[in-house]
Length: 154
Image (cartoon, rainbow, N blue to C red; front, side):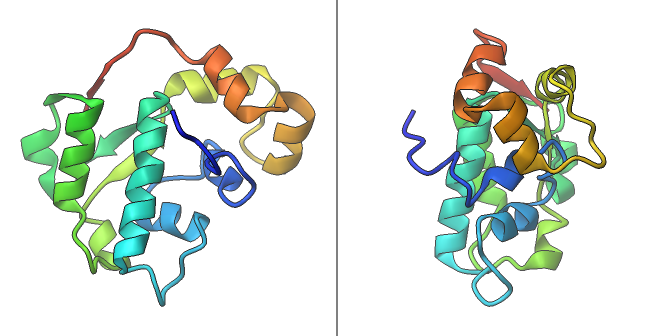
């Protein structure tokens, strides 16, 4: 996987177990703001980030917003999940629109593994925790994530 700047400081806060929820949360974490949140570039970078998190088996769709009834029990490959995200996330979407799209969450394996390393979800600085306890976050994820999973069930 090409993760070039994926694990760099620009987006490291997004790897905190409470660092994602809505698309807007991800976009703000990637450095977008209210002036450029609706841009095609924001959408492209946001989808790229979400795709990588899905490919790493780090996140899942907790709720499909306005599309939840039709998608909630559909078994999808990672590619199908991304295609559905692309369908519901239209260019020009703004913060209120994101509430009707996706709600994301980190998978239990990730949260549980971080807790085993000593992460308390309240109180500790995430960047310090990663530096002191985890080190190379990308390597740690590879070593700790479940192997041979290839479908998301929402």
